[in-house]
Amino acid sequence: MEDKIEFMAKHKKWFVVKKLKIDENTEDIEIARLLASIDETVLNKIPEYLPFDMNKLYEIADGIYQKKKGRITEEEIAEVLKKLKSPATTRKLNEITESKEGKEILKAILNNIILERLGIQTRVSPKVIEKYIENSQSSNR
Image 1: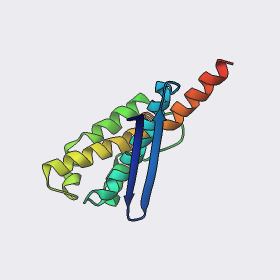
Image 2: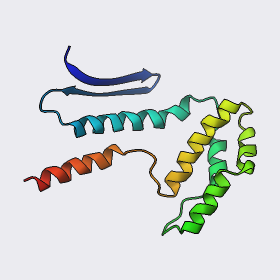
Image 3: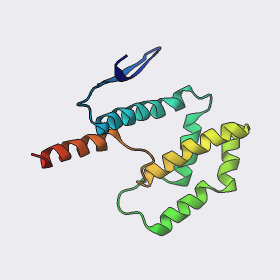
Image 4: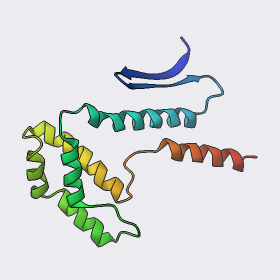
């Protein structure tokens, strides 16, 4: 069997195919780019399949921090993280679900929302890997 990575999903109107045949010329960074792309696709889709009111979660996120232009100070970051981890935030999550596991799921999503609003990336972007590959190739010429 040949080496390859294939990701295919079809559910209702969602259809995606991402694949890569791997041979002796395939660089590891190309594999990383595909895996990051699959990761991005899956993580963006997960909330749609959860049984929670995601609009309410975004309202909670807005109460913690709304993205703004300009530099964010360390004090602001500390204050936002304090709000994110506060019992008040946990109580607000109770309005969405009382399940302990449900709150853990929502907290993970909320953490990602807030960290990304703060400009703190929580995963590797396939676009950044793509730029890295392009820059590496142009500097090797």
